[in-house]
Each structure stands twice: as C-alpha cells, then as structure tokens.
Amino acid sequence: MELMVPLNTQDKSPLYEQIYRYIKKEIREGRITAGSRLPSTRILAQNLKVSRSTTQMAYDQLLAEGYAEAFPCRGYFVCKIDELVEVRQTAAAAPETRKREESACEVDFSPRGIDLDRFPFNIWRKISRNTLVDDNKAMFGAGDPQGEWNFRSAIGDYLHSARGVECSPEQILVGAGSEYLLLLLSQLLGRDRKIAMENPTYAQAYRVLTAQGHPVAPVEMDRRGMKVEKLEQSGAQAAYVMPSHQYPTGVVMPVKRRQELLGWAYGKPGRYLIEDDYDSEFRYRGKPVPALQGMDRGGRVIYLGTFSKSIAPAIRVGFMVLPQELLEVYRERAGFYSCTVSRIDQDILYQFITQGHYERHLNRMRAVYKGKHDALLAGLRPLERAFSITGEYAGLHVLLTHKGGMEEAKLVRRAQEAGVKVYGISGSFIHPEHNVYPSTVMLGYANLREEEIEKGCRLLGQAWLGRA
Image 1 (tube, one colour):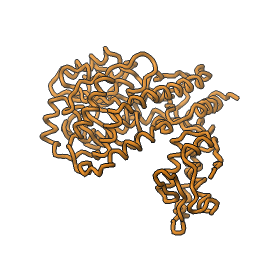
Image 2 (cartoon, one colour):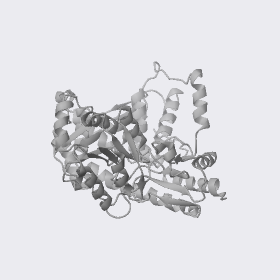
Image 3 (cartoon, helix red, strand yellow):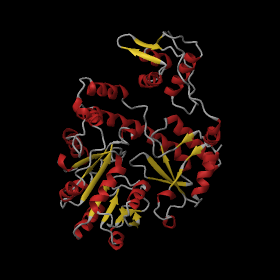
Image 4 (cartoon, one colour):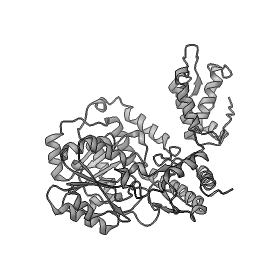
C-alpha cells in the first residue's frame, strides 16, 4: 500500500500528529480496510520526505490506540475497529477549546521547550526492549535508595569529564526531577535555614523553597552574577545560584566571582552554595566554564543537574551531588526514602550514557541549537537599533531589552497581536518591585524550526518597529 499523506507545514501541530490523524481518519472511514498492510516507516518517511522517527511516532500512536498492530518480520497491519471507542470533545469543554484557539499564535518563542524532532527514538526504543528482554525480575524491585550504583557511576564519570565535577558515586543522589531534589535538600538543610537567591531567578525553585518554609532573601545581580557583598548583608546561610547560565538573564559567572562566592561559603561554618547547572551543555562562544563544584575544596557546594534539557523533560531524572558533610546528614535523616526513579528508567539511561549515545546526542544537539541560535540572532539584527540583545552566549534563550523603555506588557501585547508569543521577565523576580528590567522579554528557540524563527523575527519587526 502507498500512502500519500497531505502534510501542511503551516499547521501548528507536529508532522507525526498530522500523519497519525490522517491514517486514523482513513481507517475509521473505511478507506483503509482491516487487515491492510501499512507501508513501513522507512518507505513512508521516504515518500513524505520526513525523518523516519516522525513516521515511527505516528505509527506508535496508532499502535497505542489500537488502530494498527505490528508483527515481527511482517510489518504493520490495520486492526478491525468495530469495537473501538472514539473519545469526542464534549459540549462542556467547548469554551475551553475556543479559548485555546483564540490564544493560538503562529510562533511561540517559549524558553521552556526543547527540540524533540531530533530525539533518538530508535536507539531509545532498542535500549528499552533490551532492558526487559530477559524478564529481569530485579528491575521491578525497589533498588538502592540513592539510585543504582552503576547509573550513579556513569553520571559521575560524565560530570567529571564534561563539567569538572569532583565526586564519587556515593555522593550522588538520583531523583525524579529538580523539584523533588530540592524538597529532599530542604530536609537536609533544615527548613529554618535562610536561602539567598539571585534576583531575578528560576521561579519554580523559589516556589519550592518557600513552600517548604525557608526564608528566602533576594540578592541583586550585576553583569557578573550575584553580588557577594549583598549576599553577605542578607544574613543567608545558603545561596542558590546558576553560574554557568543564569536564568533568566543569561549571565555566565566569571571565575573571579565564583571564587568570591566560595570565599563567602568558607567564611562561616554551615554555609552552602546550591549550584543549579540546568543547561550547561549548550554554549556557543569560548570554552565551557567548569562547574563551581569543581573549584570547591571545602565541601561547600551542592550540585544539581537534570537530563530535562539535554534529553527530554518527560524523562524526569535529576541528580544531586552532596558534600561529604551533608551526605552523613542524608543517611541520618532521609536515607530510608525509596528512590523516586524506577530501576528500568535508570538502566535505560545507564546504557544510553555508557554506550556513547548520550555524548553523540549532545554533540548533535549542540550543532542543531547553534544553527537555531545563529538564525535567531540574524533575524533579530534589524531590531538592534531599538533593542539590546543579551544572554546570547549560552543556553536556549536570549533577552531583548527595548532601548526606549517600552513597557514589558506592551511589548508582549504587540507581539501577540502579530501572532507571536514572547515572555516577559517580570515573573522571574521574587518581588515585583525589584524588577530592574521593565522593558525586557525572553525569546526561546529550542523547539522552533529555523524557518519559524525567521518568520517570528519578521513578525516582531512589524509589531515593534512597524516594518513592512
């Protein structure tokens, strides 16, 4: 069978979803009959001029919903659908649907997205199958509370080679994302401990820490990062910092400021620096700056990282490196907690890392994001007379600040009217009155194609400069 699926590049839905929807409709309406053999993912990808991972994702969805079934060495076949149930949109949900449609935009410069079109689905699927092929019962047990030793060893080896982190596997804790790890860390530090945070900062971390009862002290920044003299004045016993690529400002903290922060931590007993190294893998100018933890010789840096930006957010696997002193506290206060990441997921990631797939994926994604980064800066060039651009040396977003002082809300509104979604920086300030960037918006580019980036920049030019 040959399928000619009409793909619409102007459609906001992903290509795999368009393919899936089309085949599903053909099956339900009887134009593709039960028992028919579908073309292979490779042949369909060739015919439609898309990647094979795109057609595989479409078929996976058809398999999951029961519209097709796969037979080894034979291929994909259409199921009989007499008893299939289609879930339809109810009338009660219609207003919400209309609301989503009204708020739809042509280009969304979200700073949270990543490029999932390049996700190595075939490799991930193969490793997943291999993990369960032998009915390994041990995989379904509780496992090590800190995470499996082999997996922690692989993480430690990667952190040492790529980020200069000095640690042993026993210092590493594996958990389901950074929020869980912050909750655990709160218990180790004690909830009465005052924590300083860069201002502006990562709002989710602020919400987690305040929800645990920590007094939080916002500390001003300059172009080198958190001001150490202000940190000293805050009276905090710990400081949450993002030295490799501060969110949302994009500041990359120089070595001298890092040394000053370490000096503060060494100044009094019980002080700690919480280093969130959330997207250090992506840097576009100069050599990567090693992690702050690798400079620490006094056991005062707590290192946090995840695979959310480098692989995919849905994996929900993070890790924390504790200093020896806090490791003893962990064993005493929280060592009885079970690990929140399944042994199956840990084993898949372990194989993904140790077989070299992670390194190859990172190298590929650096090149992909560099291309998008360059396309964004080229597209924003006509706006440079009215805007200053910062944070462009690392990470997956940049900042635009209007030189004439146009208010953030007005910038966002004008962009939205032109069909583009941009994000104000004001929501990242701990207290709104502290906002020192009243005319600044964020533009993320990771989940956009280069042609979408170029289109978005043109529309922003029309919205903000009145360009034709």
